[in-house]
Amino acid sequence: MRVLATCLFAGIVFALTTDILSAVEKVAPVLNQKVKSIKGDEVDLSKYQGKVLLVVNVATRCGATPQYEQLEGLSDKYKDKGLAVLGFPCNQFGGQEPGTEEEIAKFCKSKYDVSFDMFAKVEVNGDNASPLFKKLTSESKPAGDVKWNFEKFLIGRNGEIVARFPTKTKPDAPEVVQAIEAELAKAAK
Image (tube, rainbow, N blue to C red):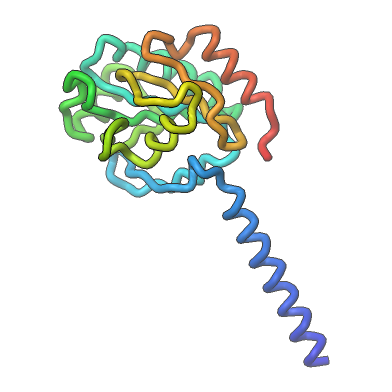
């Protein structure tokens, strides 16, 4: 009886360990990292696994800053269907994001009522680029450096980078909305 109980216990432990390892292995490489929220908290990007993500490098003093409104509109319209908009402030383009995280958060809330997830300031190009943007810029099509503020990367439910849109393409442009809707229509794996 004791041998049977020991074997049963070992089998359960093995099954649970296998399930946990399988879940860890399924995290898409682009989401297998940690970043800082705009409030300074550590965020494991794997929490977005299975969602459609629109990752955007943002700035508060850019000609494209009004895109915050469209990003918030997309977030409001599609968040219950599985879209998460992620904003990453960046000061690499014309010094158009000079503020602190606290100042950026205050601006975004007061001016555009931003409720989508915002993160700490990052670099998106060069040796000091965040690991997330290194992955996005190297694996997207076309690959290459981010050209300016408000460049948008669409990541499908499976964690694959499926589209990249330049600054001039507004978040609510038909091609962006169609790409988001196509990814939302796919089942999470």
